[in-house]
Image 1 (spheres, rainbow, N blue to C red):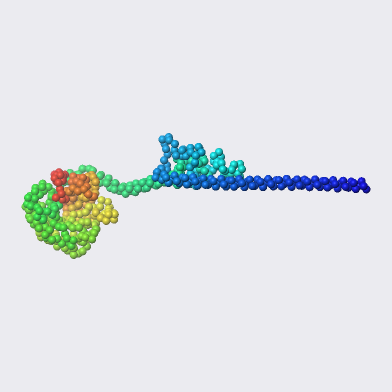
Image 2 (tube, rainbow, N blue to C red; image 1 turned 120 degrees about the horizontal axis):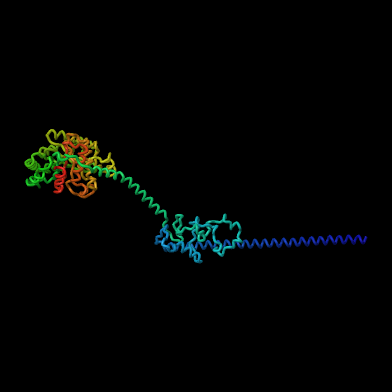
Length: 527
C-alpha cells in the first residue's frame, strides 16, 4: 500500500513536473510571441518614420521646385526684352544653351527650372539616375515597393533635369507650344512663324487668282498688237479734230484761222468739233457762251471750204452724283433740243454731244438721240456723239460699276444702239489705264474691231487719238501715244473691215497737241 502510494505520488509529481514544464514552454512561447510582436511594432514605427521622411523629402523637393520656378520667373522678367528664336540651333560649334545647362547640372550647381508641368512628355521617370537622387529621399531599398513601382509613379514629380538625353530637345526648347527654353526664358513659339507662312501662301494664292484674268487679258492685248496692218488702211478723209473754247469766245483771230488751215490742208480732217458749251444742268445754253461762232465758221469756210464746223456741246450727267444734267427729266431733254436749234441757227453745220459719265443701257439718252436726229436731219445738219469705250471683256462695265461705282464702258450692244441713231460716232479710245505702248496699241486694235462689228455702214466711225500729255491714274503719256494708237487702229481695221469707207480718226485736242503728235498723225495715218 505504502509502495503503491509512493508510486502514485511519483506519478503525480511527474505529471505536475510535466505540467510545469508545459507551462514553462507556454510561458516561453508567450515570451517569444511578445518579442515578435514588439519587433513588429518597432518595424511599423520605423516604416512610419521613413514614410514621414519621404513626405518631408517630397515637401522639400516641392519647395525646391517652387523656389526654382520663382528664380526662373525672375530671370524671365529680367531678360524679357531679349528675343530668343524657339527653333534656333547653333551651328558654329559653340556650346548651346542646352549644353551649358547640362554642364551646370552635372557639376552640382543649381539646376534649371522644373519643366515637368509643361514638358512632361520629355521626362522619363523610369530612367532617373539613382546616383544623382536627392539625398534627403529614402533609400529605394527601404521604400514601399508600391511607391517605387514605375507604374505607380507620377510623371509630374519626375525631374526633367535627369531625363534620358535621348529624349531631350537638342535646343533645350519646349516643343509643347508653351515656348520656354531650359533656362526659363519665354520665347516665341514656332507656331507664329508657321502661321505667317500660311498667311503668306494664302495671300499669294488670292493675288494670283485676282491677277490671273488681268494677266491673261494683258497678254491677249499684247498679241493683238502683233502683225502688220493691211495695205491701204490709211485715212479715208473722214477724220475730225476737237477744238477748244478759245475759237468762239474771241481769243482767236484770222491769223490763227490761217495757221490752222495750213496745218489741216494736207491731212484727212473733214470735221471740226468746236467747244461751244457747256450746257447748263437744265439743258439750256446761253448765246453768250459762243459769241464768235459765226465769225469762226465764215473764216474756216474761206480757208477750208470742205471742212464742216460743228458745235461741241457737253455737260456732266447726274448719274453718279446729285449735281449735273438729268436726262430722265422731259423738261431737260426739251431744253437740249432748244439749245441745238440755237447753235444750228448760228451757222454750225452739226451738233456734237459729249455727255459723261453716261452709263451703258441709259434709255433716256436713246430717247434724246431720237429727238435730236429728227431735228438735225430736218435742217440738213449732222448729229455726232462722243462714245464711251466698249467692254473689253463681257459685262465688264457691270463688274467695274459694282466695284468702283463708275461703269466706264458700254456693252457692245448698247454701243450699236447709239451708233444706229447718229451720223457720226467717235470712240474716246484714250484714258485706258494701259501702262505700255504695246498694250495700249493692242487695246485700241480691240476697240476698233468691237466698234466696227456693230456700227452700221451708213454711220461714220471715228477712233480717238490722244493729242494731249498727262500722267495720272488712267492715262500715262509714255504709253498712250499717237503712233501706238494709229497702229492699233490700222490693225483693228485690217482684221475686221479693211475696206470700210466711212471710217476715220478723231484728234483730241488742238490746244494740247505737240508738233510730234501732228507729225506722227501725218506719217502713220495720212501718207
